Length: 277
Image 1 (tube, rainbow, N blue to C red):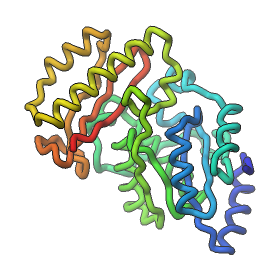
Image 2 (image 1 turned 120 degrees about the vertical axis):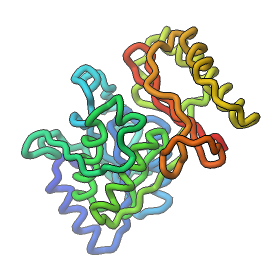
Image 3 (image 1 turned 30 degrees about the vertical axis):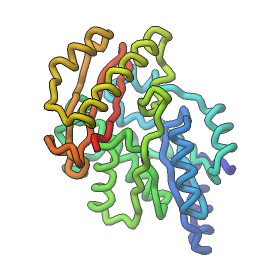
Image 4 (image 1 turned 45 degrees about the vertical axis):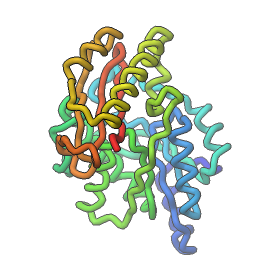
Protein backbone atom coordinates (compact mmCIF):
# COMPACT_ATOMS: atom_id res chain seq x y z
CA UNK A 1 0.00 0.00 0.00
CA UNK A 2 1.35 3.39 -1.02
CA UNK A 3 1.02 6.37 1.38
CA UNK A 4 0.83 9.88 -0.08
CA UNK A 5 0.56 13.11 1.92
CA UNK A 6 0.86 15.70 -0.85
CA UNK A 7 -1.97 16.49 -3.25
CA UNK A 8 0.35 17.22 -6.19
CA UNK A 9 2.03 13.82 -5.85
CA UNK A 10 -1.39 12.15 -5.66
CA UNK A 11 -2.61 13.97 -8.76
CA UNK A 12 0.48 12.90 -10.72
CA UNK A 13 -0.25 9.28 -9.81
CA UNK A 14 -3.93 9.69 -10.68
CA UNK A 15 -3.00 11.13 -14.08
CA UNK A 16 -1.01 7.99 -14.85
CA UNK A 17 -3.94 5.79 -13.75
CA UNK A 18 -6.39 7.79 -15.88
CA UNK A 19 -4.28 7.21 -18.98
CA UNK A 20 -4.68 3.45 -18.49
CA UNK A 21 -8.44 3.68 -17.76
CA UNK A 22 -8.17 2.33 -14.21
CA UNK A 23 -11.39 2.62 -12.24
CA UNK A 24 -10.96 4.20 -8.80
CA UNK A 25 -12.98 3.45 -5.67
CA UNK A 26 -12.74 5.97 -2.83
CA UNK A 27 -13.37 5.48 0.89
CA UNK A 28 -13.25 8.73 2.89
CA UNK A 29 -12.53 8.34 6.62
CA UNK A 30 -11.46 10.35 9.65
CA UNK A 31 -9.32 7.47 10.83
CA UNK A 32 -9.65 5.22 13.89
CA UNK A 33 -10.22 2.49 11.33
CA UNK A 34 -12.63 -0.27 12.38
CA UNK A 35 -14.47 -3.17 10.72
CA UNK A 36 -17.04 -0.77 9.25
CA UNK A 37 -14.36 1.10 7.29
CA UNK A 38 -12.71 -2.17 6.23
CA UNK A 39 -16.03 -3.44 4.86
CA UNK A 40 -16.27 -0.32 2.68
CA UNK A 41 -12.76 -0.91 1.38
CA UNK A 42 -13.58 -4.54 0.61
CA UNK A 43 -16.72 -3.47 -1.28
CA UNK A 44 -14.70 -0.87 -3.17
CA UNK A 45 -12.09 -3.47 -4.15
CA UNK A 46 -14.79 -5.82 -5.43
CA UNK A 47 -15.98 -3.19 -7.89
CA UNK A 48 -12.92 -1.12 -8.81
CA UNK A 49 -9.37 -1.64 -10.08
CA UNK A 50 -7.73 0.70 -7.56
CA UNK A 51 -8.89 1.67 -4.04
CA UNK A 52 -7.93 4.88 -2.29
CA UNK A 53 -8.68 5.44 1.39
CA UNK A 54 -8.23 8.86 2.94
CA UNK A 55 -7.68 9.74 6.59
CA UNK A 56 -8.44 13.36 7.40
CA UNK A 57 -10.03 14.67 10.59
CA UNK A 58 -11.90 17.60 9.09
CA UNK A 59 -11.98 20.58 11.49
CA UNK A 60 -14.82 22.41 9.73
CA UNK A 61 -17.44 19.74 10.52
CA UNK A 62 -16.96 19.84 14.29
CA UNK A 63 -19.20 22.07 16.38
CA UNK A 64 -16.64 22.67 19.11
CA UNK A 65 -12.90 22.40 19.69
CA UNK A 66 -13.28 19.84 22.49
CA UNK A 67 -15.03 17.38 20.16
CA UNK A 68 -12.40 17.95 17.47
CA UNK A 69 -9.47 17.57 19.88
CA UNK A 70 -10.90 14.45 21.53
CA UNK A 71 -11.69 12.67 18.25
CA UNK A 72 -9.68 9.40 18.43
CA UNK A 73 -6.47 9.54 16.42
CA UNK A 74 -4.74 6.17 15.94
CA UNK A 75 -2.70 6.63 12.78
CA UNK A 76 -0.12 3.85 13.37
CA UNK A 77 -2.82 1.24 14.03
CA UNK A 78 -4.84 2.60 11.10
CA UNK A 79 -1.94 2.18 8.69
CA UNK A 80 -1.38 -1.39 9.90
CA UNK A 81 -5.06 -2.25 9.38
CA UNK A 82 -5.14 -0.66 5.93
CA UNK A 83 -1.98 -2.52 4.86
CA UNK A 84 -3.76 -5.77 5.77
CA UNK A 85 -6.83 -4.76 3.75
CA UNK A 86 -7.49 -4.39 0.02
CA UNK A 87 -6.47 -0.73 0.06
CA UNK A 88 -4.02 0.28 -2.66
CA UNK A 89 -3.28 3.82 -1.52
CA UNK A 90 -3.69 5.89 1.65
CA UNK A 91 -4.08 9.63 1.13
CA UNK A 92 -3.05 11.32 4.36
CA UNK A 93 -3.16 15.09 3.77
CA UNK A 94 -2.47 17.87 6.24
CA UNK A 95 -5.01 20.63 6.90
CA UNK A 96 -2.96 22.98 4.67
CA UNK A 97 -3.22 20.53 1.75
CA UNK A 98 -7.03 20.48 1.94
CA UNK A 99 -7.51 24.12 2.99
CA UNK A 100 -4.56 25.97 1.36
CA UNK A 101 -6.31 29.32 1.77
CA UNK A 102 -7.49 28.73 5.34
CA UNK A 103 -10.48 26.92 6.82
CA UNK A 104 -13.70 27.50 4.92
CA UNK A 105 -17.10 25.86 4.56
CA UNK A 106 -19.76 26.54 1.96
CA UNK A 107 -23.49 25.93 2.27
CA UNK A 108 -24.19 24.31 -1.09
CA UNK A 109 -26.79 21.60 -0.35
CA UNK A 110 -30.17 22.87 0.84
CA UNK A 111 -32.11 19.62 0.66
CA UNK A 112 -32.48 17.34 3.73
CA UNK A 113 -31.67 20.26 6.05
CA UNK A 114 -33.22 21.55 9.30
CA UNK A 115 -33.91 17.98 10.45
CA UNK A 116 -32.06 15.33 12.48
CA UNK A 117 -28.34 16.15 12.95
CA UNK A 118 -28.59 19.45 11.08
CA UNK A 119 -30.68 20.99 13.88
CA UNK A 120 -28.35 20.14 16.76
CA UNK A 121 -25.09 20.49 14.80
CA UNK A 122 -25.45 23.76 12.88
CA UNK A 123 -22.88 24.08 10.09
CA UNK A 124 -21.76 20.46 10.46
CA UNK A 125 -23.02 19.35 7.06
CA UNK A 126 -21.63 22.46 5.36
CA UNK A 127 -18.21 21.32 6.62
CA UNK A 128 -18.88 17.78 5.43
CA UNK A 129 -20.04 18.65 1.92
CA UNK A 130 -17.24 21.23 1.49
CA UNK A 131 -14.48 18.77 2.35
CA UNK A 132 -16.07 15.88 0.42
CA UNK A 133 -16.33 18.13 -2.65
CA UNK A 134 -12.63 18.95 -2.27
CA UNK A 135 -11.67 15.26 -2.09
CA UNK A 136 -13.90 14.46 -5.06
CA UNK A 137 -12.28 17.22 -7.14
CA UNK A 138 -8.79 15.99 -6.26
CA UNK A 139 -9.36 12.25 -6.76
CA UNK A 140 -12.29 12.08 -9.23
CA UNK A 141 -13.24 8.52 -8.31
CA UNK A 142 -15.66 6.40 -10.29
CA UNK A 143 -17.33 5.22 -7.06
CA UNK A 144 -17.27 6.46 -3.47
CA UNK A 145 -18.45 4.31 -0.54
CA UNK A 146 -20.26 5.45 2.62
CA UNK A 147 -21.71 3.58 5.59
CA UNK A 148 -25.43 3.93 6.25
CA UNK A 149 -24.88 4.80 9.92
CA UNK A 150 -24.55 8.40 8.73
CA UNK A 151 -27.70 8.15 6.64
CA UNK A 152 -28.52 11.86 6.42
CA UNK A 153 -24.92 12.51 5.37
CA UNK A 154 -25.23 10.06 2.48
CA UNK A 155 -28.39 11.83 1.27
CA UNK A 156 -26.62 15.20 1.32
CA UNK A 157 -23.52 13.88 -0.46
CA UNK A 158 -25.71 12.26 -3.12
CA UNK A 159 -27.41 15.64 -3.58
CA UNK A 160 -24.01 17.37 -3.72
CA UNK A 161 -22.95 15.12 -6.61
CA UNK A 162 -26.14 16.03 -8.51
CA UNK A 163 -25.76 19.77 -7.84
CA UNK A 164 -22.09 19.83 -8.89
CA UNK A 165 -22.80 17.49 -11.84
CA UNK A 166 -19.99 15.18 -10.78
CA UNK A 167 -19.59 11.90 -12.60
CA UNK A 168 -19.30 9.91 -9.36
CA UNK A 169 -21.46 7.06 -8.13
CA UNK A 170 -22.27 7.26 -4.40
CA UNK A 171 -22.55 3.73 -2.99
CA UNK A 172 -24.38 3.36 0.36
CA UNK A 173 -23.25 0.31 2.32
CA UNK A 174 -25.09 -1.44 5.14
CA UNK A 175 -23.74 -0.56 8.59
CA UNK A 176 -21.45 -3.09 10.22
CA UNK A 177 -22.88 -3.66 13.66
CA UNK A 178 -21.38 -4.71 16.96
CA UNK A 179 -22.71 -7.93 18.49
CA UNK A 180 -25.00 -5.71 20.59
CA UNK A 181 -26.75 -4.56 17.39
CA UNK A 182 -25.39 -0.99 17.29
CA UNK A 183 -23.42 0.39 14.35
CA UNK A 184 -19.66 0.57 14.83
CA UNK A 185 -18.38 4.09 15.45
CA UNK A 186 -14.91 5.54 16.01
CA UNK A 187 -16.15 7.68 18.91
CA UNK A 188 -17.13 4.54 20.86
CA UNK A 189 -13.45 3.87 21.54
CA UNK A 190 -13.59 6.84 23.96
CA UNK A 191 -16.04 5.12 26.33
CA UNK A 192 -15.05 4.62 29.94
CA UNK A 193 -16.01 1.18 31.36
CA UNK A 194 -19.07 2.76 33.02
CA UNK A 195 -20.12 4.46 29.77
CA UNK A 196 -19.68 1.19 27.89
CA UNK A 197 -22.06 -0.46 30.33
CA UNK A 198 -24.63 2.29 29.65
CA UNK A 199 -24.06 1.75 25.91
CA UNK A 200 -24.80 -1.97 26.27
CA UNK A 201 -28.03 -1.17 28.13
CA UNK A 202 -28.96 1.38 25.47
CA UNK A 203 -28.46 -1.26 22.77
CA UNK A 204 -30.83 -3.66 24.55
CA UNK A 205 -33.52 -0.97 24.92
CA UNK A 206 -33.29 0.13 21.29
CA UNK A 207 -33.26 -3.39 19.86
CA UNK A 208 -36.34 -4.30 21.88
CA UNK A 209 -38.10 -1.12 20.75
CA UNK A 210 -37.22 -1.74 17.08
CA UNK A 211 -38.33 -5.38 17.25
CA UNK A 212 -41.67 -4.37 18.77
CA UNK A 213 -42.19 -1.85 16.00
CA UNK A 214 -41.35 -4.43 13.34
CA UNK A 215 -43.52 -7.19 14.77
CA UNK A 216 -46.56 -5.31 15.97
CA UNK A 217 -46.38 -2.09 13.97
CA UNK A 218 -47.30 -0.31 17.22
CA UNK A 219 -48.14 3.33 17.50
CA UNK A 220 -45.04 4.98 18.88
CA UNK A 221 -44.90 5.84 22.53
CA UNK A 222 -41.80 8.00 22.54
CA UNK A 223 -42.55 9.39 25.98
CA UNK A 224 -42.45 5.93 27.54
CA UNK A 225 -39.31 4.99 25.58
CA UNK A 226 -37.51 8.20 26.60
CA UNK A 227 -38.47 7.51 30.20
CA UNK A 228 -36.92 4.03 29.86
CA UNK A 229 -33.72 5.60 28.51
CA UNK A 230 -33.52 8.09 31.39
CA UNK A 231 -33.54 5.13 33.80
CA UNK A 232 -30.27 3.91 32.26
CA UNK A 233 -28.71 7.40 32.44
CA UNK A 234 -29.40 8.51 28.87
CA UNK A 235 -30.33 12.06 29.86
CA UNK A 236 -29.69 13.93 26.63
CA UNK A 237 -31.57 12.95 23.48
CA UNK A 238 -31.19 14.94 20.27
CA UNK A 239 -33.83 12.98 18.38
CA UNK A 240 -35.84 9.77 18.19
CA UNK A 241 -37.84 9.84 14.97
CA UNK A 242 -39.26 7.60 12.30
CA UNK A 243 -38.59 8.95 8.83
CA UNK A 244 -39.02 7.81 5.24
CA UNK A 245 -35.80 6.37 3.79
CA UNK A 246 -36.19 8.20 0.50
CA UNK A 247 -37.17 11.76 1.41
CA UNK A 248 -36.33 11.78 5.16
CA UNK A 249 -39.79 13.08 6.00
CA UNK A 250 -41.63 11.98 9.16
CA UNK A 251 -43.83 8.99 8.33
CA UNK A 252 -46.19 6.44 9.82
CA UNK A 253 -45.56 4.01 6.96
CA UNK A 254 -42.98 1.58 8.33
CA UNK A 255 -42.62 -0.26 4.99
CA UNK A 256 -39.99 2.19 3.81
CA UNK A 257 -38.91 3.81 7.08
CA UNK A 258 -36.13 3.82 9.64
CA UNK A 259 -35.92 4.78 13.29
CA UNK A 260 -33.33 7.55 13.59
CA UNK A 261 -31.59 7.93 16.95
CA UNK A 262 -29.14 10.47 18.40
CA UNK A 263 -28.35 10.38 22.13
CA UNK A 264 -25.47 11.21 24.44
CA UNK A 265 -23.57 9.01 26.86
CA UNK A 266 -21.64 11.59 28.87
CA UNK A 267 -20.24 13.88 26.19
CA UNK A 268 -20.06 11.15 23.53
CA UNK A 269 -22.77 11.42 20.89
CA UNK A 270 -24.23 8.19 19.54
CA UNK A 271 -26.10 8.22 16.22
CA UNK A 272 -27.69 5.26 14.51
CA UNK A 273 -30.66 4.22 12.41
CA UNK A 274 -32.64 1.02 12.16
CA UNK A 275 -34.74 -0.33 9.29
CA UNK A 276 -38.34 -0.97 10.26
CA UNK A 277 -39.03 -3.28 7.32
